[in-house]
Length: 140
Image 1 (cartoon, rainbow, N blue to C red):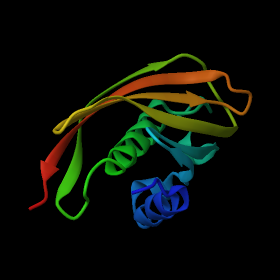
Image 2: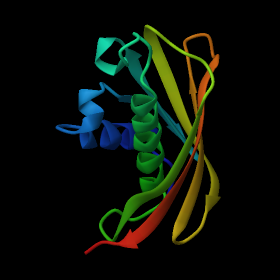
Image 3: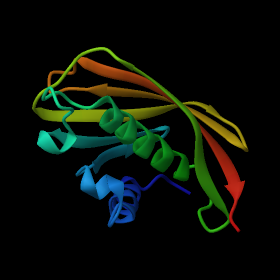
C-alpha cells in the first residue's frame, strides 16, 4: 500500500477537534515516509508570564506530533499509542510568529517507537529539540 500524504494530514487535523491540539491551534502541514510536520502560532495563548513561548506548550506540540506520527505505523482499529517518556531541550526563546515541529522516526519496533522532534522558527532556527518514546498497545 502506498503512502497517502493527504489522507494522513486530514486524519491528523480531524483528530484534533475538541482537544488540546485545537486549543493550541496546531495544524498538521506535511507528512512522508517516517516523518510528520505541524505548525503552531506563537501568541499570548502559548506565552509564559514573561511573554515568551511556554516550554510546556512546546512540549505539548512535540508530544502531539510524535504521537500522531506513530499512528502512521499502526492499525488504529487494533492498536493505540501512548507516550511514555518525553525530554526537551529548549535552546532559543520565541515571542511571536510560528513554530514548526517535525517528528522523525529513530526506532520503529512492534511495541516501542522512538522519535526525534525538532521545533524550529520561520527562519529554520532550532527552538527546541525533543525525544519522545511511544508505547504501542492493543486497543481495548
